[in-house]
Length: 264
Image 1 (tube, rainbow, N blue to C red):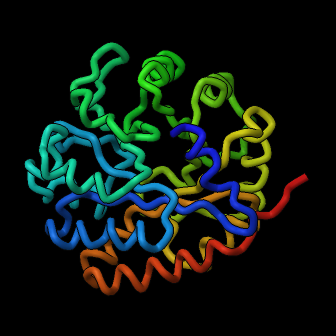
Image 2 (image 1 turned 90 degrees about the vertical axis):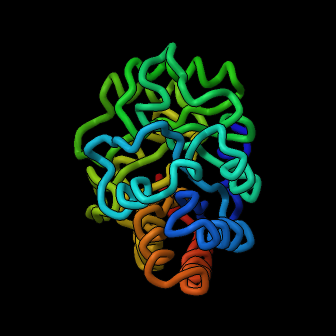
């Protein structure tokens, strides 16, 4: 499964595409239609939340926080058969882990069943030490995705440790909060180059603030291997329903056909 995440952005002539959805938001049938539409539309992986309480870090806000708060507890309970029925619709999935589910390296609280079928985990909260968490995930055959942020500074020692111990792909945030658009310019390209100097085998997915095909083209020009949409996907689903989501998703999927720039 880990290899599958790495290869998802390696198809010649297109970028990888991941989408974050919340089971039960804005209602159960709509969320089920959305995950089915994403899979039918060729999404590479579906991100979903793993949490035991609706509390989040400062990086989670807007529609994502609203969706998590409004989704029924039965929809998000890691032991819920209903949740596992939803997850069964997504053959490749990445669990977004919140602090309530994994508060410390030796304290996984969400149960083992939720990990079945997960290709990777991405922690919403700031986990330390990252390498030790990565070892725990690897023992279960799951990649722990290293999260970084766009920065003008060189890769730090801590970031290098994350890159060297993480797997699957690199989650590169364009801003500090979900849904907030970041600047896409040559600074992103330099950051991607710095990351690849440490882990050339990992695809780099950009996230936070990506909404439209033009955003996909912009990150492709800077050398990104793929992109992930969360806040805007949930907004479209809430405001336009399954048919609007399907139309938007098709536009984004078509935009991924632009090959990523080969950086030297």
